[in-house]
Length: 290
Image (cartoon, rainbow, N blue to C red; front, side, top):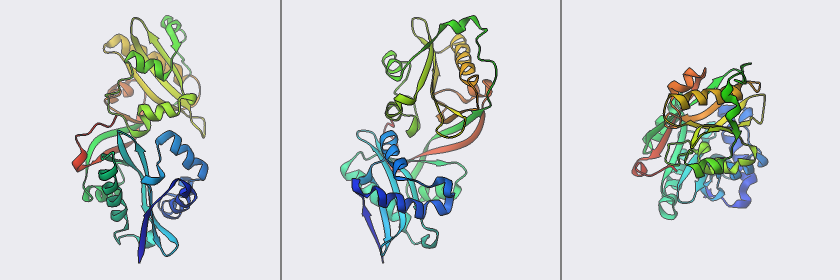
């Protein structure tokens, strides 16, 4: 008979082992987790041991839910997997329902998940478990380009900028829909890695926050935006040319159309690589994600 339990802060080795036993058979060894990567997720994504669960058959982990939590905001189902030889026995549903029940009592009650659009079976499982689609995100990618825009006289207006300055100026709109990893809390946790550039007049006309990817030569754009109007959009294009001219392809992961329109990104030379659907437990759909 299967057993289930929520975890504690000293259960990180157990959670890592359970994740690798249950998630890796579905998605490959490149998706394996280490204790260090879990702890990095704690810092950057708010992974929360007491929002994580393990299902056991005897002493063997057969299912795992890795949850993240932001007080006053939401709980997030970061990863949920059942070992292939124990699927279709209700373990995944029990893990998900248990977290929803705990969140409803201890808060925050809002429970969200972000699932790639092409994971149709996983999406169907969440929908049957009472989740509804609430948002759509996309990964965009563009190759490096040699033109950094330095010949443009407006390039002299480019200045460094940080997240705090963007928030204080109002350019980083806290009310915009953002994926969990692109929220202000996630960006603040990675502030030391972020490089920001902007063009400002009496307001910030356009800005880009990016960081070097941990693997490979890619650069990730973590936040970008422009004030209304064609002039600000042109300045955003200039900033993106600077980022793309630094070498290597540029990726914009999990961006919502409310942050920057997908049409604008297409005009800047970016192509959609993957789409992700943001889900919320149906009884929490009116809550705020920020």
